[in-house]
Image (spheres, rainbow, N blue to C red):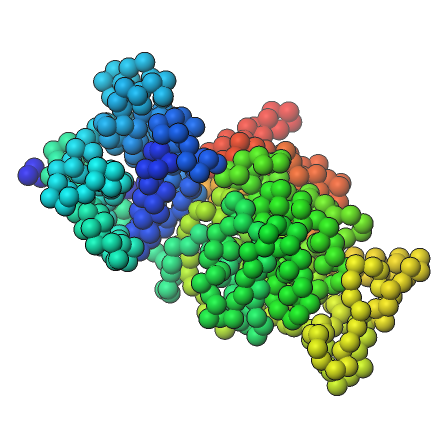
Length: 616
């Protein structure tokens, strides 16, 4: 065996790509988990088609999973790919443009047979045509290797083929200097009741690793030192998982049962699946027959005294509109989680977008104010779900929390918080010992008291008809309606006194501010570093509270000549800023169903600053 050398890097990006059935999502997740458990900072991006199982070998059936990992400053899945795993010709063709020149390509030659070349619209094999000369090509006969490895197990060719992704994962583990033990342990848990599949997967994982170790075509390993992280317990978590845990934590601290009423829809479904494993924490969930039933069951559970929430995506939010108005009118606590995806209509179900902002803030009939929050990263989904619950319970109001498909499915290393250190969750319960007036309000928060049904003295009427102030009787009095509309608006506006001021970071003396919201956070952080290294002076800030805005937002905007707002839509936050603050802002928009790259934002900002300077 030849001597191998090790090259050290600050971070690397790997992209696993193949057919939808090739297990690329699993390989990516297992690699990300191994990287995180070995002390690296890892950010991921699952990129898969909407079809559950697209025709094999086609360009539109390619599924990919990208992992960016390093020892510091890892905020995105990475702009350029260092190592591309392409299991067939179509996955190579659709992903090659992401690979940096000189990068490594790992392929399975079986995926480049005549049929696959035809489906991928290659006239001749790229493995032989010379068009990959700018890259380091590692063309492996993975299928042949695993058939030899598993020849003594008596497995069917179909089941043997299912292990290709694990073999390649073993090669990548060696190439990046990772231990295979965490994946081996996962396989033992996964296939504990299927000993044949367990033995096969363990054998090919080990075989892939040993291949990398012995193969002379791989003379180098790419090593990254461990990250410097705060002491604590970490887990690699998706945004959907973090959202669910945030709701569980809020219910625990509020000493309430948690209820989720939801209808499955991509990419929000995982929250419903994940929360079902927390029954021991008093969590109840209902898979409703449609979106309307989902939110209405949650409103019913809230009326019954639970911390209730509902989840949805895309067109599901439209179907919840009428019932969300009912939640406003009844002034019950409710969290509506919208995992945004590409739209309109069915749109791009598996791709992220930020185009439900205006609908979330204003998209209801009548004067129907509702707080709107936005999470910034997968781990931040925990804290913003918790914060949405705190506001809903304290102010007796429905709250919308916006995440998106990118946050929902991507992962990051998340420090498990101490529940005792989280903000207090206040519950405004009525006291049966005191006379109850259902719409009598707290002087500070304007919230009404929450009366759980079935308790003597707390009988009251509730529903969608306008209620009289204080008594809660049905009222059509014009002056009363004006008063109640004003009170509901004042209640939501007053939440601005109870949320953090917008924090501006970076070069605060600059005349240029990058203002982001939602999942643009990571790309803006990385873009800021790129600009900073070039000597471009710029400040940055991230909005997590969008209705109401932080109290100091107007003053912050006044301080900067140029306010640049990157959004994965056509300028929805920009529209809100212009309308409220009469401040002209500069839009940077992308609506492609893929997140911003850091370089895209950095280049746009640099060009804007350069143009403005030349005009002066």
